[in-house]
Image (cartoon, rainbow, N blue to C red; front, side):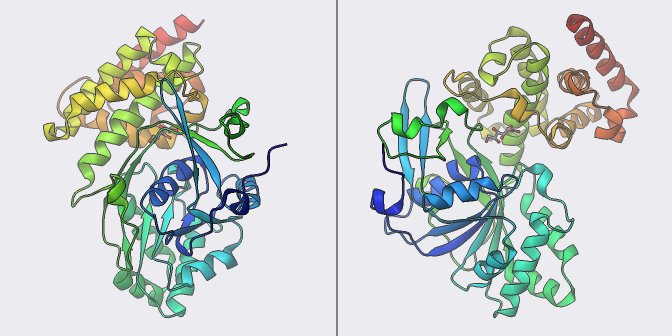
Length: 403
Ligand code: CS2
Protein backbone atom coordinates (compact mmCIF):
# COMPACT_ATOMS: atom_id res chain seq x y z
CA UNK A 1 0.00 0.00 0.00
CA UNK A 2 1.28 3.49 -0.80
CA UNK A 3 2.23 5.59 2.25
CA UNK A 4 -0.02 8.52 3.20
CA UNK A 5 1.03 12.01 2.12
CA UNK A 6 2.46 13.65 5.26
CA UNK A 7 5.28 16.14 5.85
CA UNK A 8 7.61 13.38 7.02
CA UNK A 9 6.85 11.14 4.06
CA UNK A 10 7.20 14.02 1.56
CA UNK A 11 10.15 15.71 3.32
CA UNK A 12 8.34 19.05 3.46
CA UNK A 13 8.74 20.95 6.75
CA UNK A 14 5.97 23.37 7.79
CA UNK A 15 6.43 27.13 7.40
CA UNK A 16 5.43 29.39 10.31
CA UNK A 17 1.81 30.63 10.23
CA UNK A 18 1.66 34.14 8.76
CA UNK A 19 -1.73 33.95 7.02
CA UNK A 20 -5.14 32.81 8.26
CA UNK A 21 -7.82 31.61 5.87
CA UNK A 22 -11.57 31.09 6.29
CA UNK A 23 -13.13 28.50 3.96
CA UNK A 24 -10.97 25.48 3.27
CA UNK A 25 -12.57 24.40 0.00
CA UNK A 26 -11.04 23.21 -3.25
CA UNK A 27 -10.95 26.76 -4.63
CA UNK A 28 -8.78 28.11 -1.81
CA UNK A 29 -6.35 25.26 -2.28
CA UNK A 30 -6.14 25.76 -6.07
CA UNK A 31 -5.83 29.52 -5.75
CA UNK A 32 -4.44 31.34 -2.68
CA UNK A 33 -2.65 28.23 -1.31
CA UNK A 34 -1.09 27.51 -4.71
CA UNK A 35 -0.14 31.19 -5.15
CA UNK A 36 1.49 31.41 -1.75
CA UNK A 37 3.49 28.23 -2.30
CA UNK A 38 4.57 29.45 -5.75
CA UNK A 39 6.32 32.53 -4.35
CA UNK A 40 7.78 31.06 -1.15
CA UNK A 41 11.10 29.30 -1.90
CA UNK A 42 12.35 29.88 1.66
CA UNK A 43 9.28 28.40 3.36
CA UNK A 44 8.33 31.60 5.22
CA UNK A 45 4.59 31.84 4.60
CA UNK A 46 2.37 29.22 6.26
CA UNK A 47 -1.43 29.31 6.13
CA UNK A 48 -3.72 28.23 8.97
CA UNK A 49 -6.99 27.38 7.19
CA UNK A 50 -10.40 26.93 8.81
CA UNK A 51 -13.09 24.79 7.22
CA UNK A 52 -16.41 26.35 6.19
CA UNK A 53 -19.48 24.61 4.83
CA UNK A 54 -17.79 21.20 4.87
CA UNK A 55 -16.29 20.54 8.33
CA UNK A 56 -14.88 17.13 7.28
CA UNK A 57 -12.41 18.95 4.99
CA UNK A 58 -10.23 20.04 7.92
CA UNK A 59 -10.02 16.57 9.40
CA UNK A 60 -8.90 14.87 6.19
CA UNK A 61 -6.32 17.55 5.50
CA UNK A 62 -5.05 17.66 9.10
CA UNK A 63 -4.19 13.94 8.85
CA UNK A 64 -1.94 14.90 5.92
CA UNK A 65 -0.37 17.82 7.85
CA UNK A 66 -2.20 20.21 5.49
CA UNK A 67 -0.54 18.74 2.39
CA UNK A 68 -2.50 17.92 -0.76
CA UNK A 69 -1.84 17.24 -4.40
CA UNK A 70 -2.97 19.90 -6.86
CA UNK A 71 -3.46 18.49 -10.34
CA UNK A 72 -3.47 21.04 -13.15
CA UNK A 73 -5.64 19.40 -15.77
CA UNK A 74 -5.09 20.76 -19.26
CA UNK A 75 -6.91 19.61 -22.40
CA UNK A 76 -4.09 17.08 -22.98
CA UNK A 77 -2.36 16.24 -19.73
CA UNK A 78 -2.31 16.29 -15.95
CA UNK A 79 0.43 18.12 -14.06
CA UNK A 80 0.51 17.19 -10.36
CA UNK A 81 2.31 19.03 -7.56
CA UNK A 82 2.18 18.81 -3.78
CA UNK A 83 1.22 22.19 -2.28
CA UNK A 84 2.90 22.75 1.12
CA UNK A 85 1.57 26.20 2.16
CA UNK A 86 -1.36 25.08 4.37
CA UNK A 87 0.35 24.17 7.62
CA UNK A 88 -2.71 23.88 9.84
CA UNK A 89 -6.18 22.67 8.82
CA UNK A 90 -8.68 23.48 11.54
CA UNK A 91 -12.38 22.85 12.10
CA UNK A 92 -14.30 26.12 11.47
CA UNK A 93 -16.17 25.88 14.79
CA UNK A 94 -12.87 26.32 16.69
CA UNK A 95 -13.36 30.04 17.29
CA UNK A 96 -10.82 29.87 20.13
CA UNK A 97 -8.10 28.83 17.68
CA UNK A 98 -9.20 31.48 15.19
CA UNK A 99 -8.97 34.20 17.85
CA UNK A 100 -5.55 32.98 18.96
CA UNK A 101 -4.14 32.91 15.43
CA UNK A 102 -5.62 36.25 14.36
CA UNK A 103 -4.38 37.84 17.62
CA UNK A 104 -0.78 36.74 16.93
CA UNK A 105 1.29 39.67 15.75
CA UNK A 106 3.06 37.40 13.24
CA UNK A 107 -0.23 37.00 11.34
CA UNK A 108 -0.34 39.59 8.54
CA UNK A 109 -3.63 38.88 6.75
CA UNK A 110 -6.87 36.93 6.80
CA UNK A 111 -8.05 35.69 3.42
CA UNK A 112 -11.55 34.30 2.89
CA UNK A 113 -13.46 32.08 0.47
CA UNK A 114 -16.85 31.55 2.07
CA UNK A 115 -19.04 31.72 -1.11
CA UNK A 116 -21.16 34.65 -2.25
CA UNK A 117 -23.96 33.57 0.07
CA UNK A 118 -21.61 33.38 3.06
CA UNK A 119 -21.42 37.11 3.87
CA UNK A 120 -24.37 37.27 6.30
CA UNK A 121 -24.01 38.74 9.78
CA UNK A 122 -25.90 36.13 11.81
CA UNK A 123 -24.23 34.62 14.90
CA UNK A 124 -21.84 31.83 13.92
CA UNK A 125 -21.35 33.23 10.39
CA UNK A 126 -17.79 33.66 9.08
CA UNK A 127 -18.03 37.44 9.59
CA UNK A 128 -19.30 37.06 13.16
CA UNK A 129 -16.37 34.74 13.88
CA UNK A 130 -13.98 37.15 12.24
CA UNK A 131 -15.14 40.13 14.26
CA UNK A 132 -14.60 38.15 17.47
CA UNK A 133 -11.10 37.21 16.30
CA UNK A 134 -10.31 40.84 15.44
CA UNK A 135 -11.41 41.84 18.92
CA UNK A 136 -8.79 39.41 20.26
CA UNK A 137 -6.13 41.08 18.09
CA UNK A 138 -7.19 44.52 19.25
CA UNK A 139 -6.91 43.42 22.89
CA UNK A 140 -3.55 41.76 22.27
CA UNK A 141 -1.96 45.04 21.15
CA UNK A 142 -3.80 45.87 17.97
CA UNK A 143 -1.12 45.45 15.31
CA UNK A 144 -2.44 46.34 11.84
CA UNK A 145 -3.70 43.56 9.58
CA UNK A 146 -5.27 43.07 6.13
CA UNK A 147 -8.58 41.32 5.42
CA UNK A 148 -8.71 39.84 1.93
CA UNK A 149 -12.07 38.43 0.76
CA UNK A 150 -11.71 36.19 -2.32
CA UNK A 151 -15.32 35.53 -3.31
CA UNK A 152 -17.11 36.61 -6.47
CA UNK A 153 -18.69 39.75 -5.02
CA UNK A 154 -18.01 43.22 -6.46
CA UNK A 155 -16.15 45.48 -4.03
CA UNK A 156 -15.73 42.55 -1.65
CA UNK A 157 -13.28 44.49 0.55
CA UNK A 158 -15.79 47.31 1.09
CA UNK A 159 -18.60 44.80 1.70
CA UNK A 160 -16.62 43.11 4.48
CA UNK A 161 -15.54 46.41 5.97
CA UNK A 162 -19.14 47.65 6.24
CA UNK A 163 -20.26 44.34 7.73
CA UNK A 164 -17.51 44.22 10.35
CA UNK A 165 -18.11 47.83 11.37
CA UNK A 166 -21.77 47.00 11.86
CA UNK A 167 -20.91 44.07 14.12
CA UNK A 168 -18.24 45.90 16.14
CA UNK A 169 -18.78 47.92 19.33
CA UNK A 170 -17.50 51.52 19.48
CA UNK A 171 -13.90 50.79 20.61
CA UNK A 172 -13.40 48.03 18.14
CA UNK A 173 -14.94 50.13 15.40
CA UNK A 174 -12.40 52.84 15.93
CA UNK A 175 -9.51 50.39 15.84
CA UNK A 176 -10.84 48.70 12.70
CA UNK A 177 -11.11 52.06 10.97
CA UNK A 178 -7.52 52.95 11.84
CA UNK A 179 -5.67 49.63 11.69
CA UNK A 180 -7.48 47.10 9.53
CA UNK A 181 -7.02 47.30 5.77
CA UNK A 182 -9.65 45.82 3.47
CA UNK A 183 -8.32 44.52 0.19
CA UNK A 184 -10.74 43.93 -2.69
CA UNK A 185 -9.86 41.07 -5.00
CA UNK A 186 -11.04 39.43 -8.18
CA UNK A 187 -10.12 35.74 -8.26
CA UNK A 188 -10.27 33.23 -11.07
CA UNK A 189 -9.51 29.54 -11.47
CA UNK A 190 -12.11 26.97 -12.48
CA UNK A 191 -11.95 24.30 -9.77
CA UNK A 192 -14.82 21.82 -9.76
CA UNK A 193 -15.71 19.66 -6.80
CA UNK A 194 -13.72 16.41 -6.98
CA UNK A 195 -15.52 13.49 -8.63
CA UNK A 196 -15.35 10.19 -6.68
CA UNK A 197 -13.56 8.60 -9.62
CA UNK A 198 -10.68 11.05 -9.09
CA UNK A 199 -10.12 10.38 -5.38
CA UNK A 200 -7.06 8.27 -6.10
CA UNK A 201 -5.67 10.63 -8.77
CA UNK A 202 -2.48 11.43 -6.81
CA UNK A 203 -1.53 7.78 -6.47
CA UNK A 204 -2.37 7.11 -10.11
CA UNK A 205 0.00 9.91 -11.07
CA UNK A 206 2.76 8.31 -9.03
CA UNK A 207 2.45 10.27 -5.78
CA UNK A 208 1.80 9.35 -2.15
CA UNK A 209 -1.73 8.36 -1.08
CA UNK A 210 -3.79 11.55 -0.83
CA UNK A 211 -7.38 11.67 0.45
CA UNK A 212 -7.80 15.36 -0.44
CA UNK A 213 -6.48 16.03 -3.94
CA UNK A 214 -7.74 19.00 -5.97
CA UNK A 215 -8.13 19.14 -9.74
CA UNK A 216 -8.05 22.54 -11.39
CA UNK A 217 -7.53 24.15 -14.79
CA UNK A 218 -4.07 25.49 -15.75
CA UNK A 219 -5.41 29.08 -16.02
CA UNK A 220 -5.35 31.36 -12.97
CA UNK A 221 -5.80 35.03 -12.28
CA UNK A 222 -5.67 37.19 -9.16
CA UNK A 223 -6.22 40.95 -9.16
CA UNK A 224 -6.00 42.84 -5.86
CA UNK A 225 -6.53 46.40 -4.72
CA UNK A 226 -5.61 47.62 -1.25
CA UNK A 227 -2.82 47.80 1.32
CA UNK A 228 -1.11 45.12 3.41
CA UNK A 229 0.12 47.12 6.42
CA UNK A 230 1.85 44.12 8.02
CA UNK A 231 3.41 42.72 4.83
CA UNK A 232 2.45 39.87 2.49
CA UNK A 233 3.93 37.17 0.28
CA UNK A 234 5.21 38.58 -3.03
CA UNK A 235 2.24 37.12 -4.95
CA UNK A 236 3.02 39.32 -7.95
CA UNK A 237 6.02 37.06 -8.65
CA UNK A 238 3.53 34.41 -9.75
CA UNK A 239 1.44 36.84 -11.79
CA UNK A 240 -0.94 38.49 -9.28
CA UNK A 241 -1.80 42.05 -10.33
CA UNK A 242 -2.04 44.93 -7.87
CA UNK A 243 -4.24 47.71 -9.23
CA UNK A 244 -5.70 51.02 -8.02
CA UNK A 245 -9.15 50.50 -9.49
CA UNK A 246 -10.44 46.96 -9.38
CA UNK A 247 -13.95 47.62 -10.71
CA UNK A 248 -13.26 46.95 -14.43
CA UNK A 249 -11.50 43.65 -13.64
CA UNK A 250 -14.34 42.57 -11.39
CA UNK A 251 -16.93 43.30 -14.03
CA UNK A 252 -14.98 41.44 -16.68
CA UNK A 253 -14.63 38.33 -14.53
CA UNK A 254 -18.01 38.40 -12.81
CA UNK A 255 -20.15 39.14 -15.84
CA UNK A 256 -18.30 37.39 -18.65
CA UNK A 257 -17.10 34.26 -16.84
CA UNK A 258 -19.49 33.85 -13.92
CA UNK A 259 -22.49 35.29 -15.78
CA UNK A 260 -21.95 32.80 -18.62
CA UNK A 261 -21.53 30.02 -16.06
CA UNK A 262 -24.86 30.81 -14.41
CA UNK A 263 -26.56 31.01 -17.80
CA UNK A 264 -25.10 27.64 -18.81
CA UNK A 265 -26.01 26.11 -15.43
CA UNK A 266 -29.70 26.88 -15.96
CA UNK A 267 -30.11 26.60 -19.73
CA UNK A 268 -27.71 23.65 -19.98
CA UNK A 269 -29.52 21.60 -17.34
CA UNK A 270 -32.88 22.40 -18.96
CA UNK A 271 -31.48 20.99 -22.17
CA UNK A 272 -30.34 17.82 -20.47
CA UNK A 273 -26.62 18.52 -20.00
CA UNK A 274 -24.60 17.69 -16.92
CA UNK A 275 -21.31 19.51 -17.50
CA UNK A 276 -20.09 22.93 -18.67
CA UNK A 277 -18.00 21.29 -21.41
CA UNK A 278 -21.15 19.64 -22.82
CA UNK A 279 -23.37 22.72 -22.60
CA UNK A 280 -20.90 25.06 -24.28
CA UNK A 281 -20.83 22.97 -27.47
CA UNK A 282 -24.64 22.83 -27.67
CA UNK A 283 -25.41 25.55 -30.27
CA UNK A 284 -28.44 26.82 -28.33
CA UNK A 285 -26.44 27.33 -25.13
CA UNK A 286 -23.46 28.74 -26.99
CA UNK A 287 -25.63 31.26 -28.85
CA UNK A 288 -27.13 32.21 -25.50
CA UNK A 289 -23.68 32.88 -24.06
CA UNK A 290 -22.59 34.90 -27.10
CA UNK A 291 -25.72 37.05 -26.97
CA UNK A 292 -25.35 37.64 -23.23
CA UNK A 293 -21.66 38.52 -23.73
CA UNK A 294 -22.55 41.19 -26.29
CA UNK A 295 -24.75 42.84 -23.65
CA UNK A 296 -22.21 42.42 -20.84
CA UNK A 297 -19.44 43.89 -22.99
CA UNK A 298 -21.48 47.01 -23.66
CA UNK A 299 -22.01 47.36 -19.91
CA UNK A 300 -18.28 46.90 -19.18
CA UNK A 301 -17.47 49.46 -21.85
CA UNK A 302 -13.67 49.33 -21.53
CA UNK A 303 -11.80 48.24 -24.62
CA UNK A 304 -8.43 48.43 -22.83
CA UNK A 305 -9.39 45.17 -21.10
CA UNK A 306 -8.90 43.06 -24.25
CA UNK A 307 -12.40 41.62 -24.19
CA UNK A 308 -12.14 39.79 -27.54
CA UNK A 309 -9.17 37.78 -26.33
CA UNK A 310 -10.76 37.30 -22.91
CA UNK A 311 -13.96 35.83 -24.39
CA UNK A 312 -12.04 33.64 -26.86
CA UNK A 313 -9.97 32.24 -23.98
CA UNK A 314 -13.15 31.69 -21.94
CA UNK A 315 -14.65 29.55 -24.69
CA UNK A 316 -11.54 27.39 -24.65
CA UNK A 317 -11.58 27.13 -20.87
CA UNK A 318 -15.26 26.11 -20.86
CA UNK A 319 -14.60 23.58 -23.63
CA UNK A 320 -11.74 21.80 -21.78
CA UNK A 321 -13.19 18.29 -22.08
CA UNK A 322 -11.11 16.90 -19.22
CA UNK A 323 -12.55 19.28 -16.59
CA UNK A 324 -15.76 17.77 -15.17
CA UNK A 325 -17.50 20.93 -14.00
CA UNK A 326 -21.03 20.03 -12.98
CA UNK A 327 -23.73 22.52 -13.94
CA UNK A 328 -25.59 21.52 -10.76
CA UNK A 329 -22.67 22.75 -8.64
CA UNK A 330 -22.73 26.16 -10.35
CA UNK A 331 -26.53 26.31 -9.95
CA UNK A 332 -26.21 26.37 -6.13
CA UNK A 333 -27.19 29.73 -4.55
CA UNK A 334 -28.50 30.75 -7.98
CA UNK A 335 -30.55 33.70 -6.78
CA UNK A 336 -27.56 35.41 -5.12
CA UNK A 337 -25.39 34.66 -8.12
CA UNK A 338 -27.84 35.95 -10.75
CA UNK A 339 -28.27 39.14 -8.75
CA UNK A 340 -24.52 39.77 -9.02
CA UNK A 341 -23.83 38.37 -12.48
CA UNK A 342 -26.86 39.02 -14.71
CA UNK A 343 -29.05 41.67 -13.08
CA UNK A 344 -26.52 44.55 -13.36
CA UNK A 345 -26.08 43.84 -17.08
CA UNK A 346 -29.84 43.68 -17.62
CA UNK A 347 -30.35 46.96 -15.80
CA UNK A 348 -27.61 48.68 -17.80
CA UNK A 349 -29.06 47.46 -21.09
CA UNK A 350 -32.60 48.49 -20.17
CA UNK A 351 -31.40 51.92 -18.99
CA UNK A 352 -29.76 52.37 -22.41
CA UNK A 353 -33.07 51.57 -24.09
CA UNK A 354 -32.09 48.09 -25.31
CA UNK A 355 -33.90 44.78 -24.93
CA UNK A 356 -31.46 42.81 -22.73
CA UNK A 357 -32.71 39.63 -24.44
CA UNK A 358 -29.62 37.60 -23.47
CA UNK A 359 -30.13 38.46 -19.80
CA UNK A 360 -33.85 37.72 -20.10
CA UNK A 361 -33.03 34.26 -21.47
CA UNK A 362 -30.64 33.52 -18.58
CA UNK A 363 -33.26 34.59 -16.05
CA UNK A 364 -36.05 32.70 -17.83
CA UNK A 365 -33.95 29.54 -17.80
CA UNK A 366 -33.53 29.86 -14.03
CA UNK A 367 -37.30 30.41 -13.63
CA UNK A 368 -37.98 27.33 -15.76
CA UNK A 369 -35.43 25.16 -13.95
CA UNK A 370 -36.20 25.92 -10.31
CA UNK A 371 -39.35 28.06 -10.38
CA UNK A 372 -37.38 31.23 -9.54
CA UNK A 373 -39.27 34.54 -9.54
CA UNK A 374 -38.01 37.83 -10.96
CA UNK A 375 -39.74 39.71 -8.10
CA UNK A 376 -37.36 38.02 -5.66
CA UNK A 377 -34.36 38.78 -7.86
CA UNK A 378 -34.77 42.46 -8.60
CA UNK A 379 -37.77 44.73 -8.06
CA UNK A 380 -36.96 47.17 -10.85
CA UNK A 381 -36.62 44.46 -13.47
CA UNK A 382 -39.82 42.85 -12.23
CA UNK A 383 -41.61 46.19 -12.69
CA UNK A 384 -40.18 46.66 -16.19
CA UNK A 385 -43.03 45.39 -18.37
CA UNK A 386 -40.97 45.30 -21.58
CA UNK A 387 -38.31 43.14 -19.96
CA UNK A 388 -40.87 40.92 -18.25
CA UNK A 389 -42.65 40.21 -21.50
CA UNK A 390 -39.35 39.03 -23.02
CA UNK A 391 -38.78 36.80 -19.99
CA UNK A 392 -42.30 35.37 -20.35
CA UNK A 393 -41.83 34.69 -24.05
CA UNK A 394 -38.51 32.93 -23.41
CA UNK A 395 -40.05 30.96 -20.58
CA UNK A 396 -42.92 29.81 -22.78
CA UNK A 397 -40.46 28.53 -25.41
CA UNK A 398 -38.46 26.67 -22.77
CA UNK A 399 -41.51 25.12 -21.18
CA UNK A 400 -42.84 24.02 -24.57
CA UNK A 401 -39.57 22.40 -25.57
CA UNK A 402 -39.37 20.70 -22.19
CA UNK A 403 -42.92 19.32 -22.22
C1 CS2 B 1 -18.70 29.32 -10.72
C2 CS2 B 1 -17.37 29.78 -10.08
O1 CS2 B 1 -19.74 27.90 -9.14
C3 CS2 B 1 -19.77 29.01 -9.67
O2 CS2 B 1 -20.61 29.84 -9.39
O3 CS2 B 1 -19.14 30.30 -11.60
O4 CS2 B 1 -17.03 28.97 -8.99
C4 CS2 B 1 -16.24 29.81 -11.10
O5 CS2 B 1 -15.89 28.52 -11.52
C5 CS2 B 1 -15.02 30.51 -10.55
O6 CS2 B 1 -15.36 31.80 -10.14
C6 CS2 B 1 -13.90 30.54 -11.59
O7 CS2 B 1 -12.91 31.42 -11.22
